Amino acid sequence: MDSRIRLSGITRQSVVDGLGFRYVVFAQGCPHGCKGCHNPSTHTFEGGELKAIDNILQEIRKDSMLDGITCSGGECFEQAEQFAYLAKSVKDMGLNVWAYTGYTFEEIMQSKEERKGWGEFIRYIDVLVDGRYEEDNRDLSLSFRGSTNQRLIDMQKTLSTGKLSLVAI
Ligand code: SF4
Image (cartoon, rainbow, N blue to C red; front, side, top):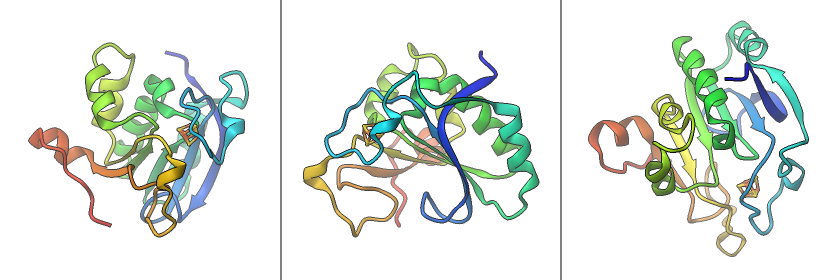
């Protein structure tokens, strides 16, 4: 695995990308092409910057205010091995992990054996916000998501019970 991750940016302290104080890592590269996407500059897989994951972890470790990290995009499942390593290391620090993806939960479960790192990455995610952004279903009143098709999934409960479990926020 490459010890670097291709990112479009980092927000070091956010309160809008999940519950609590969060370090947000934005992946560069997204294949979904959602109409009305707010971050079209994150779509190309050649752009952004390659960052050493261990340097990111060092920064996270130094900030005692953080509740967790959020893996956002772009599409973080296109670099799932790197995000799995980042997420596992963050969980080892006692922090929680949120992840945004344009894939649906069902698509991820269907392909988790074939796609590199997918099966591992989901094991370390606490809250998965899934599904493409659908402009026609945009709803500004929703917490932490843009359109009504997207769900906040309690991944740990879902994986342990085998039944899709949503987070009520
Ligand atoms: S998944 Fe996210 S980054 Fe990718 S096109 Fe859709 S809204 Fe944009």
